[in-house]
Length: 170
Image (cartoon, rainbow, N blue to C red; front, side):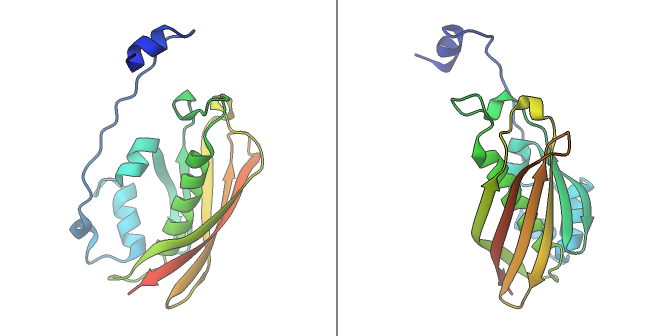
């Protein structure tokens, strides 16, 4: 049975999403500090990463060691229980933790997540509205960095919190 046939056999109309993205061009951000690279993405000078395009994440605010992203929630990310899949919230937490650290790094330095812990505090549904995720770099060392994430729904209620350790790669 095709996805269209499956959707037709269930109540409610089938919905569709078109996703457009650019292939990652790592050279596009060379010669920039982490904060400069994030500003280039926010301002459209460099395309956003494909995952951000897929999930509709966008940069709202940037400063050294602190970032804010938003992500609209709809039923396309629901799990079988009709609640937004925790993976979306986790990806948002990972993104803001990583970008908060990235915003502190000098040119020629990158990072990767070592670990991530997310606490889900309340369910997220399409009715939750736009999620706003804030990431703060709490300590950035020469080899390891630490960051925290807080995610709130459109009403301002906190739906998740996270902490991450990241490897700094010089």
